[in-house]
Image (cartoon, rainbow, N blue to C red; front, side, top):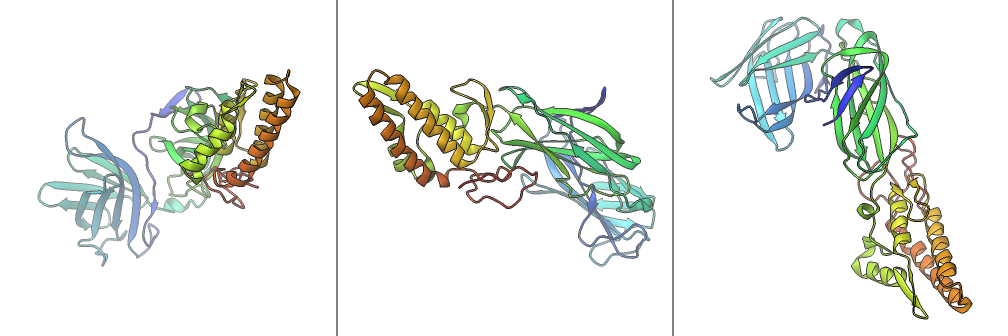
Length: 390
């Protein structure tokens, strides 16, 4: 579970993750059209205390001045749709008189609440649950919060938690913030403040447990009580994080499975271990390092034993470093046999040619999209995710 705190005050290990905003055709709290509001919350399957939870999109629709929107059975509706597994958790309809909600789902569940022109609060179900919706633009505040993810030069070692620091500022002094951790473009962690919290520029610190293989980055966004979201939400501000992973988790020796197991086997035979006059030259550790460079992840070097972040390493540089490493091994292990050194280094050049030809399909050119992306994008969010596959 992710943990976050502002200064010395713990702000959450978030169980509820909201995403407040307009849905469908948006309207302001003072308009004559129907107002659709959406939040995201975790809801239980069933009434048992240990029931499985699901993240659901909860939507409330009504006419702010009362009456019956033509798209609903009554003058108000409340629905909750679970993402995984897909399921309808709530499907209630009823009345809204301009201030008070009275909704029913069949004959068993009742949901009641109020709307004060800014916030709709609905409570009901079994077990009882309270939903809080904020109307966009409520109160006339049109200024969105400003968030800033804070970069760090620190390297997280294997087994450590992934850190994240950011600030949130809003003219109202309060906002609800949301943060997510990504590994190679896939979301592997998330967190949120419990409702509106102080948003005066204080540094919020937190961490996630070690999931994924990287490259890692986190993004933060926020929303104030008036419903204003920070610019470019939910990727308003992001920062890269260097977290070391094990080389075996990102490598397969001197072959690439991108072109099938046959090609991988040939490359492994050619590059992993070669015999010269009965003397073995084992390049597997160098090839594993090369795999990590292709993936753009952070690992420990097999030669220098220092931690290396390969996110900004081009394919050409990775291939050149492999060639130099193999040739250095040839010279070191076969130093008493100049003719064998020459043969070994010649073979290294042939292997390098194969890697330059076949490696284009195995190098990840976009660190912000899941899987291997062979095309280098013009730009990424966050910046720095485009990798040179030439």
